[in-house]
Image 1 (cartoon, rainbow, N blue to C red):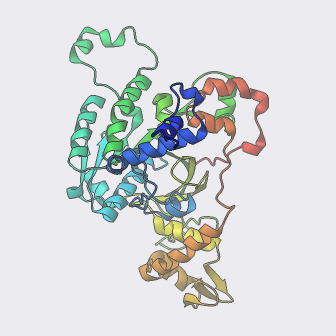
Image 2: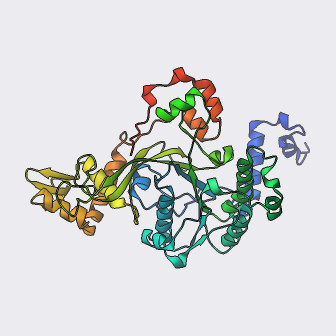
Image 3: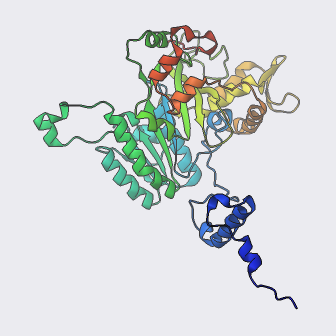
Length: 438
């Protein structure tokens, strides 16, 4: 009678001592065994990405950002969004408007870190930020800001605005000022080192507390005297950028989303956008005379997007003095592009021609109701129709990013590297950006 040796089969299945001899099947079994062993522990660990995770999404609150740029929702999990652009393009105002929408949508508190010390509650209130749900703090240096951020994270805040990266620096000690030491032996790259220390210190805490950070940054003109720099200032192209971003490389590649604002044109009352009377209100004084400045149009461009499949896209944003981002002007602008505000003979209709939301006997009555009076009910009913048209449009808002520009913006190369590979002869009309002088 044969005697069976117990456990021999199992011993044969055990991986050898040398991990290089393990088979694919053995590696699979080891992995599954570990996953089973750590199942409960992983379920409670926020650092382990769950296959059935359903994030509570919060919209940006603007049709340009949610639909045209296809950002769809404000990213959490410690992600950072950078809004940068030239002077007067509306960077801070856009960030504050997004903050207002976030507070209204979630009912949560928010914090604005005003390193530039330019905020006023009168203006923030007009944008829609409630005083009791947002703290505006003007820190004396990065260290003080970091300490307060950690305290606010522990107090339930998970939406932060940093305005702006350019002014985020360490405070200089009084002794160094009085002795004059602060102006001696200065080393290049100090701001970049300080920002690197800040991100290295705070990113893990932002992630742990499921926070979102909106960082405002100011573009700077290239100051080197190369021929490329002169060409970039006069003829900006994707392969020869006219600006640099303060804060060093890390400030570029820690961002999950990068949004570029470029001011295109300032409009006076009575001045038409693309000869269209349905975007901005006419001059209240009547006639052909132009009144005061009432709006600024800025190109909004997504140049980095690691939160969804939106890709590189761009659209037009309208900014209003004392109001902020004018979402209804953008809605009407898009509706006109897709024929959702249009004429049929002498009459004007809103929505589908065969089944309109409303009709008007003439253009003047349509402008009065939609632009001047801003009929909320009609514009609200129009929004889903515009959103559907934008979603089905696969080409209009695509923005082509050159490889060199993308590499620079994501921190893979510096401007000197672009100069080296581009050269004056590489400037191509294909990539030229149209810039209108205001």
